[in-house]
Amino acid sequence: MPKRTMQGTVVSDKADKTVTVLVERRIMHPVYKKIITKSKKFAAHDAQNHFKEGDFVRIRECAPISKSKVYEVIYDDAAKA
Image (cartoon, rainbow, N blue to C red; front, top):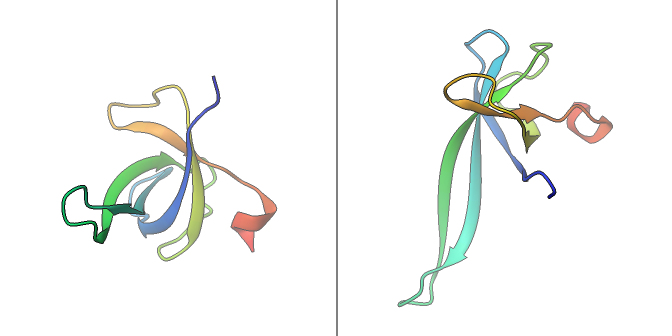
């Protein structure tokens, strides 16, 4: 089964080896048929403390690292640019 991947913006990098990523998605309201934006924050593991606030990153589902961390930041060329 493939791991879930999402992309979003880093909103906090205060914790050690952890970044908080805000993921926004657009859905259509089932009754009013209007496009609305839903957002959620995820704690992601950043082992190298590379990403800073405002960076656009991709995160991938992984084995639980702590109580709230079940995602890790994907280090690829697109994320570093």
